[in-house]
Length: 279
Picture 1 (tube, rainbow, N blue to C red):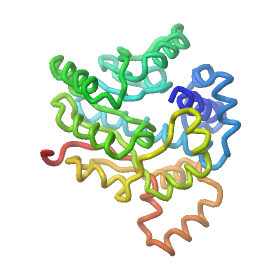
Picture 2: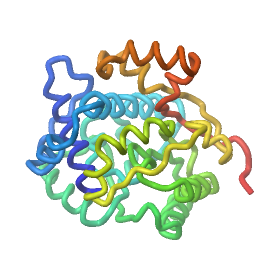
Picture 3: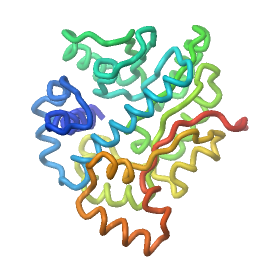
């Protein structure tokens, strides 16, 4: 997964270096390093150059908008990778920003960013996201500290199987400290195309993509969550001027073959809050 963090940073760096950039990230190039560039250049181009920046911008906006209206005291970024939001977003000074990920990745990130100053209080917690007991212990600590937490899981759920996503969903739903969760989900056909395009490269990095429920973002409704806000990747890409190649043609064909709603639901993002108790 550390290789995934590198090439994601590389695509953020490419976007940030454009004169019409939709996000700014002055340290992304440093985090990606030569390895991140080599990995990215070895992958088929396809959607990555536009998709990664659009996804990052969507999460930026959802995070800032949710913080502005929700009276949160902390953000918990699970599988944070080489995310740089504590350094590049205008976050509340009193906000506590917690990054959780593998120990070696957090250590490397801390070293690479040692000279940078985060804009809010930053804490890094070594954590295996699939270790339910460790996740529950962290969530229990945040509850004991009376935090009101917004959880972020950018780009990670796709690499978990459905059982692991369900387990994480249950843990977050049961955690008193968690007030909202920003998630994403793609439809199975998106996963199939991604696996065909760059699945072999991801397998070499031990990062196989797995999660793409047929119900899309509605998967989380069955888990006891309600989508307070939703965004469509393809709609946001059009808004931001970063559409994939042949997007108008693909949109027309998809709407003709499968109806008007499927196109926008291909990949969705949502801010979730609790809807019902989960048994």
